[in-house]
Length: 109
Image 1 (cartoon, rainbow, N blue to C red):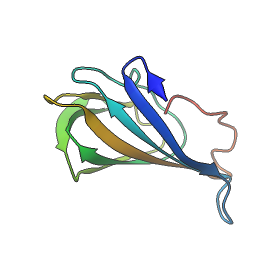
Image 2: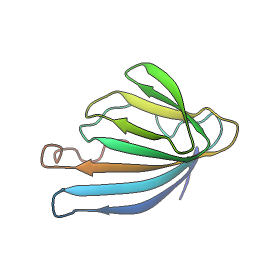
Image 3: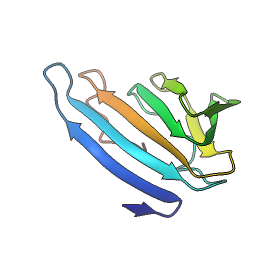
């Protein structure tokens, strides 16, 4: 599905035997764009960078993550990322909802 900054492809979003919800999507972001503003949510999240370079921010600290990098966002950390490279950046997001985070209706991902 096209977005204002690139493209997003849902891969799965379903409960598992131990989680209320397990979600995965792939996002491609154009050069200089961010998929959304920095935010926080109760779920933990893993980001797998497939291609390109992301500028990653966590609680105000910024670094670059290239293809093959894995990024972990802890619960309620202020985090965000933007394409800081010269080509489109594609990454996979894996986010899980447990009984401790079940009250979240689905903040920005």
